[in-house]
Image (cartoon, rainbow over all chains, first blue to last red; front, side, top):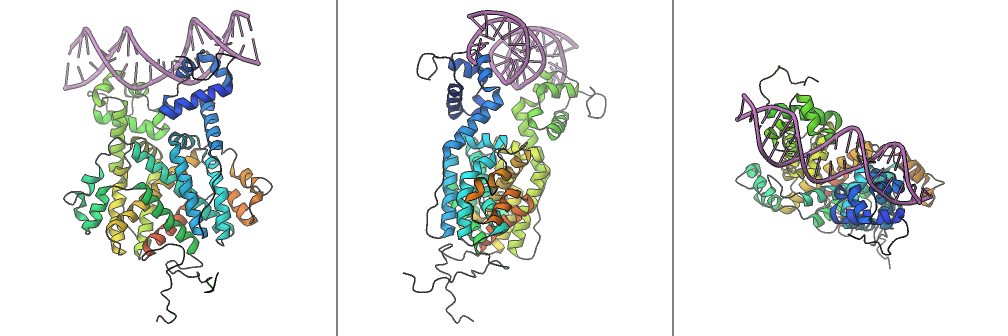
Length: 233
Length: 233
DNA sequence: ACCTGAACACCGTTCAAGT
DNA sequence: ACCTGAACACCGTTCAAGT
């Protein structure tokens, strides 16, 4: 017992409630955050928590808001706009992975927009630098945001899964369901399971290439890269 | 009062339990599926449900398994491999959107692998046809799967959100946080909010183009696009 | 083999009452 | 303004007991 919040007493603060809640969530996930446990941790009656934060749902929301604010800005790195966009996506992913429970909470509460924002600011700038304007530019920004957040959601989920069941090994085993696959190297690669870091980089690069390089109509062609006047210092 | 399961009585079946559970979940989401409500719906005691399905968690798992099995196969459409890959992604998205609660349940239980499978089979084939082999092929398959499922997760979330709060309109309003944006058309497009259908198509196309067309080494930089030796036929 | 009610250990939340 | 205990209406799950 004895809550971890410093001095002995001075009437409960909303901040103290949030702090204690943050600790509980960080350690055991939002599901473990129960009003009664929280009260016990703080050494107060359950009902006084209600006075400070309204109810469980608004407590969680306040927590999310605070954590998102702490995430801070993202600064692009790299020489080309494409590289800088990719760097923003990777940095965003890193931050989301650093707050494993945050993303699920944000997700459940539909606050994605809020979480997008720091990255969105950076992306808007880079996409503009890459020469995109108007709707296509907005789409590029959103595509990267959706891609990144979505990827982390899927990735996190797979990590949390106790033991995938069927499991990719059996699934793609050459003697199993994988027998339809013509390329044994491909079957092996699938059975090996994904390496999220690499997969993410590959995906984002491909997406960004596709978004920034489709100049007018047809895809595939590398088109309009010839800004190299051959003598750039 | 009066469960919806046909005939009057014949001792409870595991199937009947699953059926009733499916109805509840489909109508009100997994959160509304409570053992007691389910029992009431079936006209039995709560405890007899436990005899048939073990506990709530395994009931949900069985439900997921059944629904995933019902999803069936995906048949690619289109002339080029790229188009066919895109068509698989779009079809997968459609199915996931048709079972709005399924995806969240699958997600929470880490059964993504299972849900991936029908689409994965199709994608493996197309990626092979596009000339990819081994690890890059596996990465392409996974990239599209992650992209699709992730996108739907984010999309579903935003749809469920009661009212985004700040809300994109204020966020990107030219007189608000959007004032840093140099391109007013871009700011407007962002304020307008995404059109998921279009955004998804754009994203997947870009991703697939990027995945299938990156010939050898470096990305983006344009660095090695000079296969135009000025006189290539 | 299948079903039952009673009971346990939890929840979030409200309310009247205290200081 | 802030805190309290009692109480309500829910949960999932176990268990001994019935047929």
